[in-house]
Length: 350
Image (cartoon, rainbow, N blue to C red; front, side):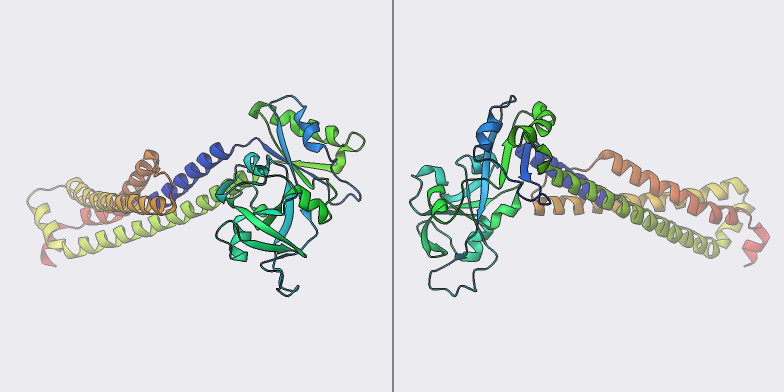
């Protein structure tokens, strides 16, 4: 129980820290796929940035082109990589860090440059800038490799092309998706205002979502899973209680002479009952302490392995120990009562 709660709490703390770092104020605006002809205007970022709330925006557009490691590769072996382009502020807005090289805004547009998403670089076998790739029949020079997009992992398979070259490859200048950041206090209002700003005549054609909600949903799913595991841990505690009861029943059977001798020397039924109840509690407490220690070690190992902050709520430890004591008391009640009811003459003669 302690291991389950500790791992869940440490994971949740890591997720909360990640959300604090990435921010929950990122909005994603895209046309509704179910509406024919819905799209974003060419000046979508500029329109949104005029809204109040310290707004920053950047667009991304996919390009209908195939990506190859080399222009001599067969056209059937392009893989699942995506060609796309983005505004100068896109990487910074999405908190994507560069593993090596620079972003597209560091050079003039139209020079045939590309920045690779982390998975795109891995798939193409590119490890350093300066290497060449092919997009359709156009050769591009890799000027940067990204570490990843934490909130938009679907962009990790993208080969980002400078806007000038993207226009020559058929891009019409419109973004497919607009990303927007603002003050936290303005997120709710902007969620309602952005569709009308970008599509005044048909705001319902645009969808506004918050990528961080996916992480929050994952946290909720983890919480439900943790609840199930705690339930299973409770079953394990009950099984442990049965083990304590079995041990104490055997102890009563094996120590009948001792019980008879104590009764003959003046011990009352209450004394015998208390003796075996205390033994059951000690047995349960020892098991609980060892279990708490092992649970803490498991949490520490898992947290260290995953790079999380070690978090073990004191309430989890206290609840675990109290649970073992309660179950130990319940498990030892019947053996203690049975020992107390044993007549001295029967116990000494057995």
